[in-house]
Length: 578
Image 1 (tube, rainbow, N blue to C red):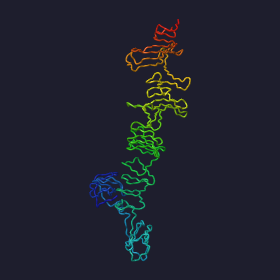
Image 2: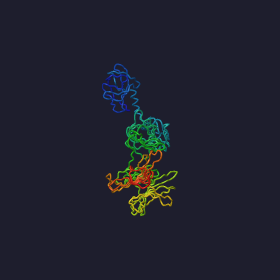
Image 3: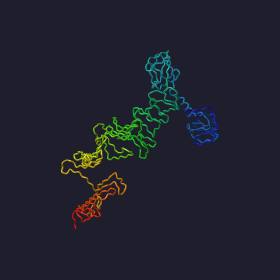
Image 4: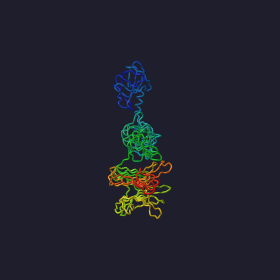
């Protein structure tokens, strides 16, 4: 702070004040020093106009005719002052003390000159001008003999404890010894030291408070408790050899650049978002990247204009997503599933609990299983069905078999497991739409040939009963209900009218029961129906449940008393039971 004063400054109190007031308005402040600097001040003496009561105050600011004051200075007490009381800038002990302190600046050079006696080596105390030499630091002493600077440590030595300079070789009476001594440069008592150029060097600068109002460049700052409030730090390393800590509620900035690693401890998070919405951290066992809670909306995006790769530290791929290309999943670094422009590509076996195929295409919708072998020999494509577990492995399959007279013809075969995990062809649908059960060559033929045939072949193993069978059945407990039927139709018939239908013949089995199957199981009547040209299908032959046969007899005209055979409603061949 800078003490200010002017000559013979005097005025009176303009407005009275009490003992706690911190401002003083005077009649005129024109003769007082301006207090324009932040640290400027002066001392004012207030005295009663009609008595000798006095108070010294410290004025720290002046605006127009009003001083900002600190009360009760220089061993005086705050009083109550009235308008017209005297206000003057007087010579006070406080003023003189501050002036002396401001003038005592350590670090200022002092010159001492000595005229030696013959052979004198030690110089101390009063010099030729009776000034007593005081040495603060030996390094701040320079010695000249006859204008030539001597070398400390070689030509002379210095003792700051004894305030002495000792020459290595004694001087003569004709020599002149000049000694320059600098103060400690430890600061200025009572006021700030302004260093306007050069630099401060040394092994250390020790200070309780070190302040800079401009730009300060420090090569090394060591502090147990350094507070930097405001400004900026450029090119600073925090924790160069030992990890440092930055504490506080937040560190804000537009960007942060790091040329090394940023280290986070277990469960220490890198948190993003105004609401601390997104977190990245290591929980001691696993790395975690997540939103902070279920209430956080939005998605997590991983975006790149090249490939996005998930993999191991050793370079194995888990997932590879290519821009405008495939998304590929890997097992043990081998591609197993990849998306394509038209669907997916699976390498190896696909095992699943279920498969639903849904498409709106007009052709080729559904599951396609293709064998792309280009060899001339027949090729196949199969669907395997089965059980594989720790107990057994049992398989069946459906297989498409290329072959026949045309390389584009394909048979469809169904295989079952006959035991011992041996697959046997059970049914074949050939390229001509014939169906063979127990044979892979349906439409065996004989006296007749068929465009489409269902062939049931019992085989030719030599067994007494290598037979094929067609079983047709139903379920009913009501009398005269259809149990099973074989129907014949002519696709060339229009099928439009009641008497002109595509159906031309029927073989039916109809139930016979009197007690809804409660006592005995039901029996059955077997009927044969045909259609006349232009007519409708009608029953022509019946074999009753009891073994009687009726030809040309409608059910309502059946005579229960007739036995064996009835032809027509009247005529007969056979026996009559009275």
